Amino acid sequence: MNKEERLSAMIDTYQNLVFSICYKVTADYFAAEDLTQEAFLAAYKGLDGFEGTNEKAWLCRIATNKSIDYLRSAGRKAVPTEDAFFEQQSETRGSPEEICLEEEVRERLLKYCSKLKPPYDEIAKAVYYDEMKAEEIARKRNENIKTVQTQIYRARDMLRKLYGKEKSA
Image 1: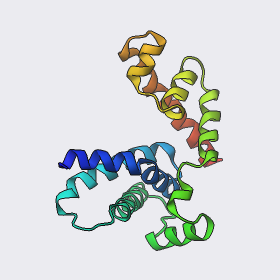
Image 2: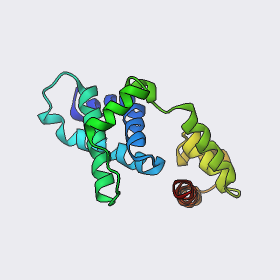
Image 3: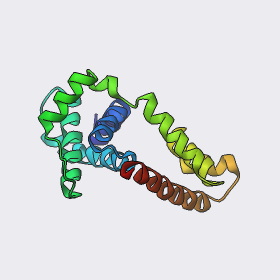
């Protein structure tokens, strides 16, 4: 199995787990999306040097480190340490699989999507809740792909603002 195939298999297997770790550390849905991509990029770069057998634990460590680095670089005041994060998770949640994309997170996301004005409400729901790609949405809506990509970008910005209001409240 070459490097790209191995990465693809890891993404298919662990994408939700890595996302849930990033989300739990940052409490920011969109930052968690970005950090998930960064974690897999870092894993790809480090695949040649990885000689361990537990790639799941390795990916979890990368995701945690990326998330903590994000919090530190953002100048946040309350930065959890890695140990504190995992102690808290084991006390309240159990294994990382159990915290994987909880229904509460999805329902909150759906609620925020429905607060957007048309067509951004439908676009946001399709992308972030139904996990559709821009090409699929464009075909379904019979619209130009560039139009849909612009709507996704704007919907994401609107959702980010709504999540920001929640955090500051």
